[in-house]
Image (cartoon, rainbow, N blue to C red):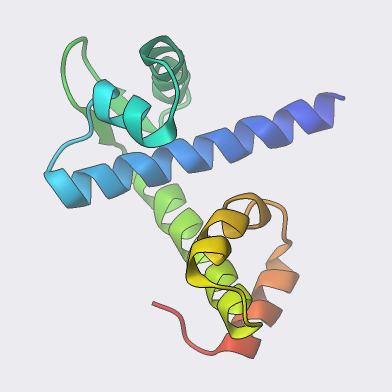
Length: 128
Protein backbone atom coordinates (compact mmCIF):
# COMPACT_ATOMS: atom_id res chain seq x y z
CA UNK A 1 0.00 0.00 0.00
CA UNK A 2 2.85 2.38 0.82
CA UNK A 3 4.39 1.88 -2.62
CA UNK A 4 1.05 2.61 -4.29
CA UNK A 5 0.70 5.88 -2.37
CA UNK A 6 4.25 6.85 -3.24
CA UNK A 7 3.66 6.14 -6.94
CA UNK A 8 0.45 8.18 -6.85
CA UNK A 9 2.32 11.10 -5.25
CA UNK A 10 4.94 10.95 -8.02
CA UNK A 11 2.19 10.85 -10.65
CA UNK A 12 0.45 13.84 -9.08
CA UNK A 13 3.71 15.78 -8.90
CA UNK A 14 4.45 15.13 -12.57
CA UNK A 15 0.92 16.08 -13.63
CA UNK A 16 0.99 19.33 -11.63
CA UNK A 17 4.44 20.35 -12.84
CA UNK A 18 3.50 19.62 -16.45
CA UNK A 19 0.26 21.61 -16.09
CA UNK A 20 2.08 24.54 -14.45
CA UNK A 21 4.67 24.53 -17.24
CA UNK A 22 1.94 24.43 -19.90
CA UNK A 23 0.06 27.33 -18.30
CA UNK A 24 3.21 29.43 -18.08
CA UNK A 25 3.98 28.73 -21.76
CA UNK A 26 0.40 29.45 -22.88
CA UNK A 27 -0.54 32.44 -20.72
CA UNK A 28 2.69 33.67 -19.14
CA UNK A 29 1.67 32.60 -15.65
CA UNK A 30 0.24 29.74 -13.62
CA UNK A 31 -2.40 30.73 -11.09
CA UNK A 32 -4.20 28.49 -8.62
CA UNK A 33 -7.57 29.22 -10.28
CA UNK A 34 -6.26 28.23 -13.71
CA UNK A 35 -4.57 25.11 -12.39
CA UNK A 36 -7.76 24.04 -10.60
CA UNK A 37 -9.77 24.57 -13.78
CA UNK A 38 -7.27 22.73 -15.98
CA UNK A 39 -7.05 19.74 -13.63
CA UNK A 40 -10.74 19.73 -12.74
CA UNK A 41 -10.18 19.93 -9.00
CA UNK A 42 -10.91 22.35 -6.18
CA UNK A 43 -8.85 25.41 -5.24
CA UNK A 44 -8.26 23.87 -1.82
CA UNK A 45 -6.74 20.74 -3.35
CA UNK A 46 -4.48 22.81 -5.61
CA UNK A 47 -3.34 24.99 -2.70
CA UNK A 48 -2.55 21.92 -0.60
CA UNK A 49 -0.60 20.27 -3.42
CA UNK A 50 1.26 23.46 -4.33
CA UNK A 51 2.38 23.71 -0.69
CA UNK A 52 3.77 20.18 -0.93
CA UNK A 53 5.48 21.03 -4.23
CA UNK A 54 7.03 24.09 -2.55
CA UNK A 55 8.18 22.00 0.40
CA UNK A 56 9.78 19.51 -2.02
CA UNK A 57 11.56 22.29 -3.94
CA UNK A 58 9.68 22.01 -7.26
CA UNK A 59 7.83 25.35 -7.25
CA UNK A 60 7.88 28.77 -5.64
CA UNK A 61 4.81 30.82 -4.88
CA UNK A 62 3.44 33.43 -2.54
CA UNK A 63 -0.19 33.87 -1.47
CA UNK A 64 -2.29 35.42 -4.25
CA UNK A 65 0.62 35.24 -6.68
CA UNK A 66 1.52 33.06 -9.65
CA UNK A 67 3.25 29.71 -9.26
CA UNK A 68 6.75 29.38 -10.68
CA UNK A 69 8.78 26.26 -11.39
CA UNK A 70 12.23 25.83 -9.88
CA UNK A 71 14.95 24.41 -12.15
CA UNK A 72 14.22 20.95 -10.74
CA UNK A 73 10.50 21.47 -11.35
CA UNK A 74 11.20 22.53 -14.93
CA UNK A 75 13.28 19.41 -15.53
CA UNK A 76 10.56 17.11 -14.20
CA UNK A 77 7.90 18.92 -16.26
CA UNK A 78 10.03 18.59 -19.39
CA UNK A 79 10.55 14.87 -18.78
CA UNK A 80 6.83 14.35 -18.07
CA UNK A 81 5.91 16.14 -21.30
CA UNK A 82 8.40 14.00 -23.22
CA UNK A 83 7.01 10.76 -21.71
CA UNK A 84 3.51 11.93 -22.60
CA UNK A 85 4.48 12.79 -26.20
CA UNK A 86 6.12 9.43 -26.76
CA UNK A 87 3.14 7.55 -25.33
CA UNK A 88 0.67 9.55 -27.43
CA UNK A 89 2.77 8.98 -30.55
CA UNK A 90 2.86 5.23 -29.91
CA UNK A 91 -0.90 5.00 -29.42
CA UNK A 92 -1.57 7.05 -32.55
CA UNK A 93 0.83 4.88 -34.57
CA UNK A 94 -1.16 1.86 -33.37
CA UNK A 95 -4.30 3.45 -34.82
CA UNK A 96 -5.80 5.01 -31.70
CA UNK A 97 -7.55 8.33 -32.38
CA UNK A 98 -5.75 11.48 -31.23
CA UNK A 99 -8.42 12.26 -28.63
CA UNK A 100 -8.34 8.80 -27.07
CA UNK A 101 -4.53 8.65 -27.27
CA UNK A 102 -4.28 11.88 -25.24
CA UNK A 103 -6.60 10.56 -22.54
CA UNK A 104 -5.04 7.11 -22.36
CA UNK A 105 -1.50 8.48 -22.33
CA UNK A 106 -2.30 10.42 -19.14
CA UNK A 107 -2.37 7.19 -17.17
CA UNK A 108 0.14 5.15 -19.12
CA UNK A 109 2.98 7.66 -19.19
CA UNK A 110 3.56 7.35 -15.45
CA UNK A 111 3.80 3.58 -15.38
CA UNK A 112 6.24 2.62 -18.11
CA UNK A 113 9.86 1.93 -17.32
CA UNK A 114 12.70 3.83 -18.95
CA UNK A 115 13.49 0.71 -20.95
CA UNK A 116 9.92 0.46 -22.25
CA UNK A 117 9.79 4.17 -22.99
CA UNK A 118 13.02 3.89 -24.97
CA UNK A 119 11.51 1.02 -26.98
CA UNK A 120 8.39 3.13 -27.62
CA UNK A 121 10.58 5.95 -28.86
CA UNK A 122 12.61 3.69 -31.13
CA UNK A 123 9.38 2.28 -32.56
CA UNK A 124 7.71 5.65 -33.27
CA UNK A 125 10.84 7.62 -34.21
CA UNK A 126 11.83 11.08 -33.02
CA UNK A 127 9.13 12.84 -31.02
CA UNK A 128 9.16 16.58 -30.30
